[in-house]
Image (cartoon, rainbow, N blue to C red; front, top):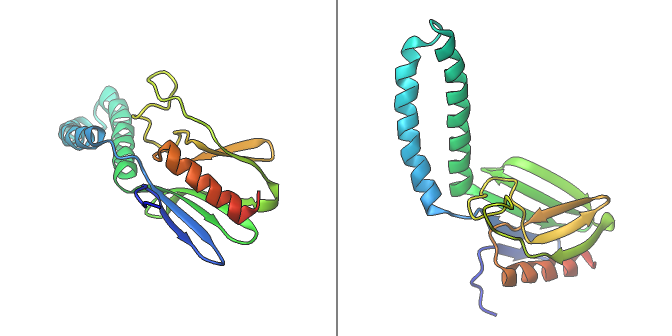
Length: 173
C-alpha cells in the first residue's frame, strides 16, 4: 500500500496512535501574518490613549480579543493536530497545539457506529476550507452514548476510510 496520507500512524501491540496535522490553508496563514503586522501598529498607536478615553479603552478590549483570535488561528494552522490514540480500554481524542487543547477519553465498550460521513464543504455549512479552527467537523464519526464525536478534518475520503478500518480493528467494533 502506498503511504501518501497526511496522518502519521503508529500501530503496536499495546496502542494505535494516529496523528493528523491541521489543514494548511496558506492564504489564511500569510494573510493572518500580514494582518498581525497591521494589528500591532494599531495596538501600539491606541496604547497612547488607553485609560484616558472610554471609547479607546473599550476599543482596545475588542482589538485585543481580535489579536488573540488571529494568533490562535495562526498557531492552529501551523502547529495544530488531531490525535486518536487507542489502548486496551480507551480511545483518546485530542485536538491540540503543542499538547495544549481539548482532550477526551472514551471507553471502548461504549463506542458505537464508527463510520465515514462526507462533510459538506461550502461557505454556508460552517465546514468550508476556511473552517480551520477546532470546531470544523471531520468525516470520521463515532457515537459515544448520546454524543457524536468527529475527527479528521484535514483527511481525504480514502484516508478517512483507512483510518476507520484501523480503529475498528483495534476496538473490535
